[in-house]
Length: 354
Image (tube, rainbow, N blue to C red; front, side, top):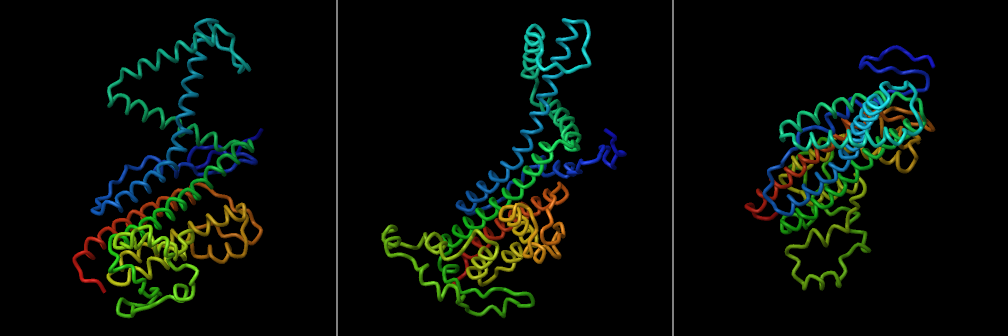
């Protein structure tokens, strides 16, 4: 097989291979954890769940790197055992090693594990950092393979990052809204805020009852649910009103926040107006509902967003330069939203309702 020239990152791409640009995943996976300084206990719980959902995405990649690292260690033990017993190493990779070499390789692997167990915390951190860094380089090399299993696997991994990021965001947005309204029912449960459109100011935001909330009588609060809370709704208004909105869509999420946060909510709305959420919503929808094939809605909504521009019927190819910066932006803006809502609640409890 004839391979092409080295790329700028030192990888070789030949006919049929793809550049998945996995170097962009390093910061996503190994960025330093951020601890938000939140005051409201329920919102702190929402933040912890959000961070846990994000970590599952990172853990999937870390698991791949650890598998590569362990494979490297096992292969090294195989080679060392073969050299020790046969006084040489065959250039061919056998389907199965002879039993004596397998047994000696197993012993060498466990001897190495015991040495690692004796490391201090600092030594282990330094050792594993070097090993994972080397495994990351191997992962990039593996990604250049023309094998369909590799390309399909990496495609699936990138799609899972997109879907996981959306799931983490939509869950956090719904739980955060519910917790906020539960905490400040007098100021938020009226749902009288007017949707804030471009060019409008805080003074333009007069009392407003969205048509959807006026007309959708099917979403009235059932009496049985009120009885469930023994007619004391002071701390569960968010829970009761959550069903009036669709938190599985970006429009539904924005409608919920726009109508609840009527006053002093510039920071809250600004977070949700970030176009990373639009990009994530558009990309997730086309991946989940259209198997990654662009339709007219994707082509229209992707314009002006940091997404691949495509024609209807064209397959959208993801890579690290698209997925990981988008996931990081959604993570960062979501953290800002958590902090803004928490700060709003602390301010709101000291301001008369209205």
